[in-house]
Structures are given as structure tokens and as C-alpha cells.
Length: 361
Image 1 (cartoon, rainbow, N blue to C red):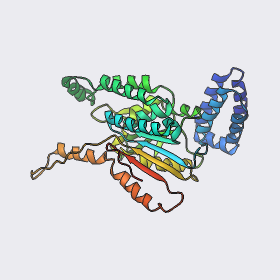
Image 2: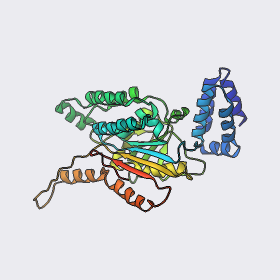
Image 3: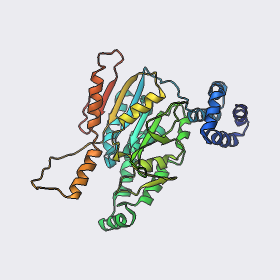
Image 4: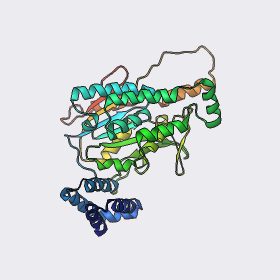
């Protein structure tokens, strides 16, 4: 740990850039290096630096180093406050209205109300905007409408041609550039530098494995010797994480990071509440759950039946996709489980908010 202590002192005398690159490379080099930091008391030394320094730059770098090492500050309230935001394309505007009402009632911005925010697809976009960039919700709404106009306005002929040539109806290159400009090219783990940034998780689907599975983009690493059921990383840029999480097949092309092929997280997990619950318990195993808020993006499902003896493949595929992205089953299951602990003095509040603003809990 001599290197880290020396590097942090250098930061206060102008050596910040060199310190950043050196410690970042050291901490991310290998698992062995991280284990060495833990066993040599590295976290304790960095916490001491964080407590004693008067430099804002050192504070930021120390928080990032702690996040890389898997250290997690205790929750600020009486328990874990968890927010999840479903996928749903431009229907993310519905979720925005719910969040605006919540801010209005609470008198605090969203990033201060929750310890952990998890989003899928359009929910991943909102997670970055409100959790990382702390963008006012009125500005989020304007940005959403502007982006929708830019991306989803094109002729049918152009869309069909693009779908045939590039496996995407809409312009994936333009979408990528828009995300770079609006989500940012900051590494996800670097968002941990600010003390008021909650833990965030963006969910994608990894497709080039023997079976598709959720893949998580986190602004934290898990604590030493703690593992998750879900694979993930903290190193890509924000725009890359959102691009992967929102790579809806047919709409946009798949997204590659290294040897991974990633698709929209909603293909497997359109409501990420179960993933978020698992992750938060890995981060704060001894903390109670205070509140779980699951925000949907609305669903219009007219009753449709057919008198035909059989159905075509198009109908079958559409039905399977609708079932795979159904967000109503999971809240019902979680609510049923919560009934078992309702008599406990530490019972959590669970809310599932959809298009009809239906509350459960």
C-alpha cells in the first residue's frame, strides 16, 4: 500500500493524472492484485486518506478506489431503498411521470431518495440520467422527446432496407453517437467518485453463450469473497452500457464488447427487481430492506383470440416475446412473498407502479 499512499499525496501537489492512471491500472489489473490490496489493509488505508484529505480530487479518487476494491458505505437511511425501472421504449415517459410525482411528494431528487437504482433498456437510460447525471426530470422529458424524434422518424422503405442489410430497422450508428453525446464516455466505475451518486446497475442480455443470460453493468465491484449469480463488469463507458441494455432486436443491431455479443436486457428481464434485490443483499448483507419501488412503463394488451385451428410462426414468436417481456408476474410473486413478513416490525414496503399507477404494499 506504500504506492497508493504516496500517489495520493502526489495528487495534492499536482500529480493527479499520473496517480489516477497508475492506481486504476493497478486495481483493475487482476484479481490477484485486488486480493493483495485487501489482505494488506488497503481499504483501511484508503478510508483513512478519505477522512483526512482536504483535496476534492483525492476524495473522488479515493471513492473510486474503494468502489474498485468492493467497499460499500453503509446505507444512509434505516434500510436499503431500492428503485427499479422497467424497459419499454418511448413509454419511458410514463416512468418519468411517476418519478416526477415522487420527487414532488418527497421534496428531494430521485438520486437522494434511493441507495440503489437498476434499469433495463429505456430504464437504463433513465437510471443514468437521474442517478448519475442528476438531470432534472423536466429536462429528462425534453431530452426523451427529442431523442425519440431523432431516432424513430424515418420512412418505411429506409427502415426495411436497414433491417435487411444491418439487422436493425433504425439507424444504429446514429443511436450510438447520440448515446455517446448524452450518456457520456465516462467509465461506469468512475461515477462512484461522487458521494451523492447511488449504486447503479444496467441490465443487458448476453447472447453468444450456450444459453442467453443477464449481464450487468455496475458502478461498483462486489465485496471481497462475495459473488453474484449474475455476470457483469464495472469498466465500460456509460454509453456502452446503455447501448447494450437497449439493443432491442429488430430495432437496433446487437452490441459487442470484447468477445461478448449483447442484446436488450428486456429479452430476459424486463422487470429487474429480482436482480436488484439479489445485488443489494450482496452489497449490504446485514441491512434490512426499507423500500422497493418498481416503476413500469405501461402496457396495453387488448384481448385477442383466434378461431383458427393453428397459428403461424409470426404469431407464435410475438406471443413468446410478449410473455418474455411481461413485467406483471414478477411484482405479483414478490408481493406474495412480502405478505409472509408483513407482521414483522422490519417489514419492507413494496410498490409496483405501472401505467394505471397501481400500488402494491
